[in-house]
Length: 279
Image: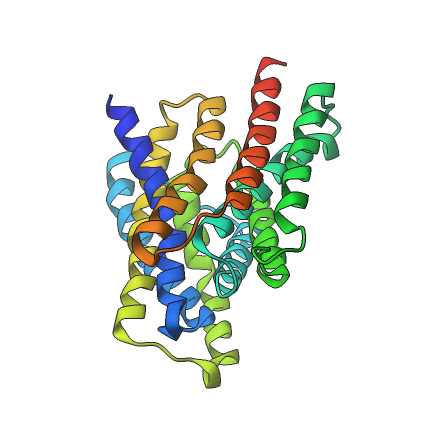
């Protein structure tokens, strides 16, 4: 039961990142670049504090890499700018689907093989995306779709960078801190477009310190007890939680197109994950 609560809290934290970002950008409370900067800085501070505390307990050492930090920054900046044009549910669906597909296709790139059922699952997910983006009054913005897809791909490669890490919390804390020079550069480049109010700033701080910093820490605690297949499957619930959050906090409409395309995409990815585990 303990692991169930940890997992649920981590998934809520992941969904909260989408909700808080959209809330901060809604009605122009804050610019996307400024949100990213505050999110990354507060995340670095929170993870640094958690790392320092656990370092004394477990003897963790500073690690991470500049490549992983760069991928983390690309994920964060494209995530924020994508949410200018996407609603919460659509953005979360594209993000997590793109991330999972990246992980799946990496198996092929690294010389692995996919079974017929796995290719069928990928094709099903692809058709779900095609249906989602077919021209209609409810078609998501292509600008937002492309940026969020890039964000998902960056998150997938970031996950691959950390695969097999013996101290994921230390790696993540280090990667957030390594992002800070990029954050400073971002603020300098977007200085004349920078605007925010206190409400938007608090959304960004909550996203960085709590949803990212504390959320990632809880997730790593859960991963110590979760099977890899279970960890992959439960993440598919994040778009669902994000959709509920969009409905509750911003009165966003969950269209039939989003429900159908989301079901097709997630079922396709689930088929691949389950088949890969069986193989």
